[in-house]
Amino acid sequence: MGHQPDSVISLFGPTAVGKTSVALALAGVLAAEGIEAVAVSADAFQLYRGLELLSGAPGPAERELLPHLLVGSHDVSETMSAGRFAEEAHEAIDRALDAGRQPVVIGGSGLYMQAAVADLEMRPPVANSAVAVPADAEGVYERLEELAPKAAAQIDPSDRYRAGRALALAQAGDRPEPGEGFWAAPLRHPTIRFGLVRDREELYRRIDDRVDEMVAAGAAGQVEAVSEAASTTARRIIGFEELPEGEIDAMKLRTRRYAKRQMTWTRRLPEARLIDLSAISDAEAARLIAHSLLDRPE
Image (cartoon, rainbow, N blue to C red; front, side):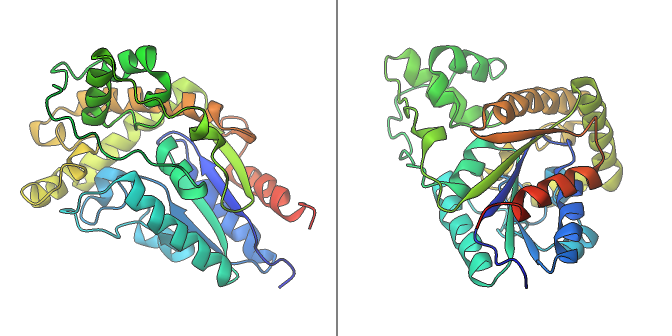
């Protein structure tokens, strides 16, 4: 093998931007160089078995072409946290490198991506149960960003419960700001970061099409099958609440709002090269990423 992997590639971007397609193309380019790639998912929701359609997890054919770790790896009844995920992601990445495989970390959650690639100091769960979560879920994350932006940066915008808790605490005078360490936390391995973006209107069309495909494929049936057993974290997947009620338009709107936040996070990534997938093909993006890896000074 001409290249011994010693670094991590991270592909970050909003839902439906095309991360999996680019990763598959990248795996093909690397394979031609004698490098075996393995994907490590940094998605809070693709962890759960039984909700693959709803979470947009790569299907069996895609996983045959590129092995994906931390996809469908946990029972839907399990409660996950970023701290627990970090331990599992670190182990997955280290094992890949030890085996001579190239880890490609793929995600759309800023917190989970940072947890995967960096030594991120995790705050313990808030213990003050006396603080009430705001009842009006809409706009909670936006208000949190205004009042405590650094705290908001550590919360997935789709996690309305955690955002509500953090907002309630901030309004009560307790602002658990993480400091600049969230983005500046030391990386565990040399990491080449790419942010995948698209024209916003194109991205929104892709989101709407994806939701329609989920519905047609039977995502509502998956939700119904696991509804009684699902943990609180599994229930936070966008669509878990909307699909059983037939609220497809609400699911699309919520996903677009989440994607807007993800686009903001993508542009915040330090030392990340942005790739506009509205301007170049998946194959061109893959070659660009591969060259950045292979042309690194030893």
